[in-house]
Each structure stands twice: as C-alpha cells, then as structure tokens.
Length: 200
Image (tube, rainbow, N blue to C red; front, side):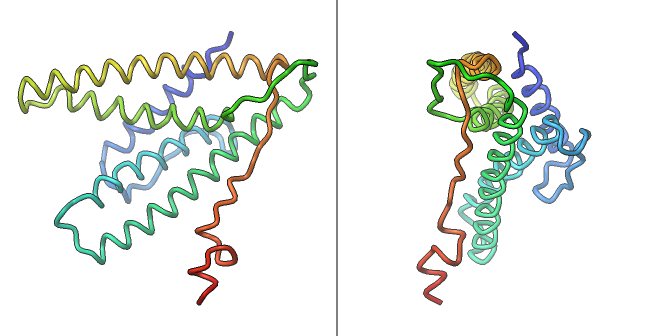
C-alpha cells in the first residue's frame, strides 16, 4: 500500500519549518509545489493551520489591546473559512481522482471524510512540533517530563491516525468505501443567513 501519509507528514513538516524561519503571522508563503497538485494543496493547508496556530497564541496575550484582539479574531474567522474551503477542495480532488473506481456492492461511507482526517493530521504535526520544543525547553525537570509524556502520546496518535488514513485511502481506491463531499454550509459568515448581519 502506498503510504500517502508519509508524503503528508513530509510536506507538513516542510511548511512548518518554512514558517518558523521567520516565525511571523504575516510571512508570505513560498509554496514549492505545482499549482493545483495535491502536494500544493497539502502545503497550503498546513500553512493556513500554522499561521492560525500562532494567531491563536497571540490573541491569548492577557495584555493585548482590545482593538488588536478584535482584528485578530476576525482574521481567525477568515482563516477558519479558508481552512474549511481547503478541506472541501482536497476532498473534491480525491473524489475526482477516484471517480472511475467501481464501488463494491457492500461499500460503506466513512463517518469522516478523507480530507477532514488529513486536516487532523496537519494539526497533529503542529502539536508535535511545538510539544517537542516544550519537551526540550529548560524550565524545570517536571515541565520536561510532562511535555515528553505528552509528546509520546502525540506521536502515538500520529501513527494511529496515519494508519487509519492510509487504510481509508486504500479502501476508496478499491471501492470498499465511497466518498461524498458535503459543503459545510457555515452560516455565521453569510450575510444572508446570520441574523446579526442581515439585521443590519
């Protein structure tokens, strides 16, 4: 079986390392992959996640200016929408890629789409990166041990989730599982559906 998640992990790590060369939320992405390729989408997906990770850190500063906090909150909202759009784009990519696969008579649909599982793998790569830093930060032995224990759990999660994604992808390729792409239909960003917005 082709280990697709090995590719994901490598691309996610490349994205995280590229971001941390400058470590600033306004850093311009340098996506090295061919436009509209799956590699391009994976790199972009993790970049969005990485920037949002750091925005979430910034907004929790107890000394943050309320005006700045509101601007960051709105930026996080836009990032969440971009993240959702990318997940749907990745699902659509695989739906098109495997559209000729003959679905087996007893095939089932997964509770979670392939791209939402990839989304979790991307976030997990960020957790591992940052927990590894914490496990090596010279604060106290207790801090180091706690973070090392958490890091080991995250690495186990990464192994299990990767196996599940690779299995799901193999099942889709061979018609044992079938895909659908459900749009999230988020209402709070839509001026026609959010009563606070259409109330104005």
